Image 1 (spheres, helix red, strand yellow):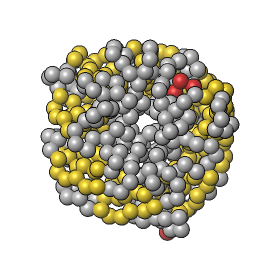
Image 2 (tube, rainbow, N blue to C red; image 1 turned 135 degrees about the vertical axis):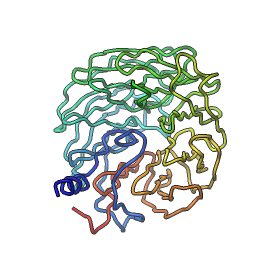
Image 3 (cartoon, rainbow, N blue to C red; image 1 turned 120 degrees about the horizontal axis):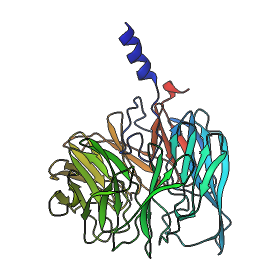
Image 4 (tube, rainbow, N blue to C red; image 1 turned 60 degrees about the horizontal axis):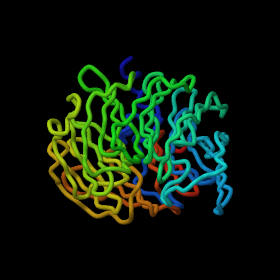
Length: 411
């Protein structure tokens, strides 16, 4: 009887979505009872306006949904940007935190598809960690008080910031990939903001906009960090290099790596994107020894791939959806989705969700044959990836934040 009670209590607990791409950083959620269809008038628990512009993805914990945004002074130069942290009550959509963390008085050029608030926050207990690339990094309490902030890392990006931080123990780790004179990975003490280690990239380097991923290989952890022209695995506690793999033509990388079936899957970036599978049990330069397979057709510039079961799914920026055998790289099928894609896919409730920039979310059933289940549209533009928590999908557009939920489970 006790076992039944424990299992029931666990099933009722809503899963948090505390970082970019969710609990594991790979786009998976254990939530169930999610809507299959929605619109502006169907299965919307609430919709609330978001000030400014930001493409950070929503993160959810403790009954709150967190975002960052940039409220700019106007279109004419010089632009002043107020870089802010926002939180909304998950039950009602009411804004409960709106705090300026940094003010940039000479905001420079960014890519038209980017924003000044694109890295996703990361939640840890009563702390919220936010990162605005070269504009600064900070820790706040969940009530919105700034614990520490730093602007000590200067590196020049061509298109603005993109990569989000990752937590490992008491370390906050992120990539700093400038395109001119500096590129490095850095770990901060999450309690103080002080630098614990810094690992400089090998030359040549160029801009990249990726988020690291921590994986377990054998008896130790590895921090997988994609950069221009190569991906490097570091010891997360020290920043010491474990292995690296090179790709001759690859920079401005965006997708986060994923890990499964003994492979790290890496999107190599511009100019000709490929997806490569690397066995992570090597040492030093593994380019000639541990590269398992490479696929070029349909590889993405921006959306991260996702592994579900024995298959790997990826959608290109122009909507070519591919299903590969995750072990061999063999293409099982391809299909064309409408629109263009920047958000990374999510697997939840037995389905895979793909969000187009034009506001359409296409849902498919995983498997060795293409099966579209539905397509749902919201107003506005979607470049941020969705979050999933408490039987709900949280979607950010260029103007609003939505909670998508079935009416029968409204709280």
